[in-house]
Amino acid sequence: MAKSKKGTRGKQPTVARNGIEKWLPWIAVAITMVVFFNSLGNDFVNWDDDVNILENPNLTAFNWAAIKGIFTSDVIGNYNPLTILTFAIEKHLFGLNPTVFHVNNLILHMICVFLVYRILEGLGMNAMLAFIGALIFGIHPMRVESVAWITERKDVLFGAFYLGALLTYIRYLDKDRKAPKLVLLILVLFALSLLSKIQAVTLPLSMLCVDYLRRRPLKLGLVLEKWPYFLLSLAVGLLGVYMLSANESLEDATNYSLIERLMVGMYSYSLYLVKFLVPYRMSPLYPYEAEIPGYFYASPIGILIVGYLFYRWWKQDRRAYVFGIAFFTFNVMFLLQILAAGQGYLADRFTYIPYLGLIFMLLSFIREWMGQPRYAGAVKGVVWSWLAVLAILTFQQNKVWANGGTLWTHVLKYYTNVNTPYNNRARYFRELKDYDRAIVDYNRSLELKEKANTYNSRGKLFFDQGKVKEALADYSRGIELDPELGELYINRAAVHGMMGNLQAALADVNKGLELDPDNANGYLNRSLIYISTQDFPKAEQDHTEYLKYKPNDPDIIYERGVVRTNLGKYELALEDFNTAIRLKNTEGLYYQQRARALEGLGRSAEAQQDLQQARNMGVGR
Image 1 (tube, helix red, strand yellow):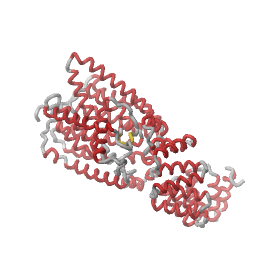
Image 2: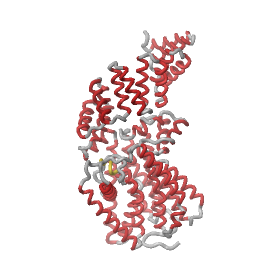
Image 3: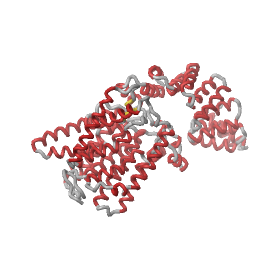
Image 4: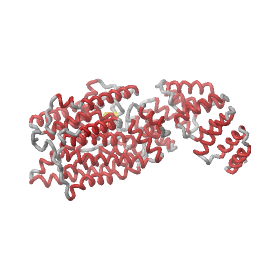
C-alpha cells in the first residue's frame, strides 16, 4: 500500500498503550456517564413511547408468538424489530420501569463512545485526539435526543452495531484483507444494525470513505467487493420505504413544491453543520411552517461553500477533510426530509452517526494547528472550553425529556403557533387528570388547526368528566374531518352506550372495528353492548379478541369468566377466575364469582370457601 500524505496513513501500526493512554477511552466513557446521569430519572414521554412500548401489542406477553409479531410488523411505519425486542425483554424482566430503559440507553451510548475512540485511533488519530473525539461524540447536546428519549433506543442500538462493523472493517484492512472471519463478523454486525434502524443502510458508503482515507484506489472493484453490503442495504431500504408508504409516512406533510422541499433539505443539511459547532435552540420538534420561510432560500449558499471546500480539498489531496465531508453527507443525505417524511424538517437524533465525519475533520484541524507552537495554547483553551460548554448544555437538555409536560413546554418556547405541542401537552395533563390545563391546551390546538385526532383527544377528556354531549359533539366533528379514523367511531360508541342508545353504539363500534381491526378497546366496548343485550356468546368472543392484545388484564379475564358462567361453561369460567385471582388476588368479587362456577361443577365445599373469602374481603356480607 502506498504511504499516505497529510496526516492519513495506510495500514495502521499497533499502538502501544502506556500510562494514562490506556485509560483514555474509559475516561471518555465515564465522563459521558456523568453528563447523562440525570437522564436516568426521566419518565416515559407521550411521543412514540406509547406506541413503541406502553401500548405495543407485541409487548403484552413474552413468548414466541410475540417475538414473531415483533419481526413481522412495523411500528408506525418503522421496521426496527431488534430495538422492539430489547423493549420486550426489559418489560418482561422489569416491568414498565422507565429507569431500566434509560439505563440501557445510556449503556449502549457508552459502548458507542468506546467504539468511536477505537475507530478514531484506527484512522490515525493519536490517543489524546481520539479521546477528544470520543468525548465530543459522547457529550454533544445533539446526542441527548438519542439517549434521553427511550424510543430512540434504535439510535444507540443501531449505532453500537454500526460502529462495531466499521471498526471491524478497519481491523480487516489492517490485516491486508486476509481475515475472512472478519468479513463474516462485519456482515453479522451490519445485519443486526439494519434490524435496529434503517439508517444503517449507509454502512457500505462509510466503508468506501475509509477506503479513500486509507488510499485504496477508487475503482469499480472497490464498490463491487462490497456487493453483499449494498444488497442488504437495498433490500432493507426498499422494505423501509414500503412500510413508510403503507403507513402514509411518506405523504407530503406540507403543500411545498419540489423546489421548496429541496430548499428544506439544503437548509437542514446546512443547519446540521452549524449545530455541530454551535448547538443552539435545540428542540425535540422542528415543525414545518405553513409557508417556507424566506431564509430557507439562502441555504444553497451553504451547499455551494461545502461543495467548493470539498473540491478544493480533493484537489489538494487533503484526505482527512474530504473523508469528513463525505462521511457526514453519506450518513445524513437520506434523512434530509426532502420527501417530507415526518412531522419536522430537522431532528437532532439524525446526527448520531453522521457527526463522526465532522468530528474527524475537527480533530484533523486541531492536529494541524497544535503543530504550530504559537497557536497550541490557544487551541487547547478553546477546545477544552468548548467541551465544558457542551457538557453543561447536555446536562441541561436532559431535563427537557423528564416527562411529557417538560418536553412539550420546551417545544412551546420556540413554536407557539403550531398545534402539535399543545395537543400533546394537553394529553399529558389529561392523563394526570389535570383537566383545567388540558382543556386550555386542546382549545388552543384546535384554534391553530382543526384535526380529527385533537377532537378525538378532547372528546376523551369530556367523556372522562362525564360531559357526554360535549364528547359526542367532538367525536362527530372528528368523523367529519377524517371518516377513516376508526377510533373516533369506537369512542363515540362508548358515548352512545352511556346515553342508553345501544343500537347507535353497536353501529359505531362495528364501523370502528371495520376500519381499525386491531383496536382492543373496540372489542371491549362491543362486549359491554352484548352483555347489556344479554348476547353472551358474542360478548365471550369479543372478550377473547380483546385478551389477544392485553392477555394479562385481570378485570376482563374475570368478566369473561362471568359471561362463561352465564353460558354454563363452568370449566372455562373456572380457568378464567383462577387466572384473574393469580394476577390480582385482592378483589372479593373474583372469589364470589368463582364460587358460582364451582357450584356449577358440583364442588360445593370449595364454593363455600370462596364465598367466605369474599365475605372476609367485604363482598356479600
